[in-house]
Image (cartoon, rainbow, N blue to C red; front, top):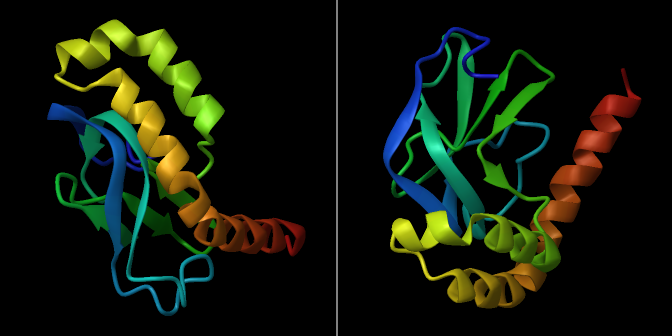
Length: 140
């Protein structure tokens, strides 16, 4: 989406993979992210990064990545982190990409253990965002 909006998309110096903290930008007026914790741990799994598209509003960042989420206009959202990931999905990704994870210095077993540890804590955030998204879609 960032590329379609004309933003620069490029390979990150190192992949950002695992259950990592994401910090929300001041998003108190955003329909999806208002009233959520300022920071939460979520699944991050990407090797590319992008600049904030012109006219977009930054919504989240991580220690390694300046733009983890943005809104363009009133209804278009781009998220780099993965609220949808469940432990079994992480296990499937680990299985599919294990050699690449090891090459990047990431312990595949640790990814699976982290998923079990963090998934339950993320449920409230993920349900809130997904329910708000469904309401937004239903209103269109």
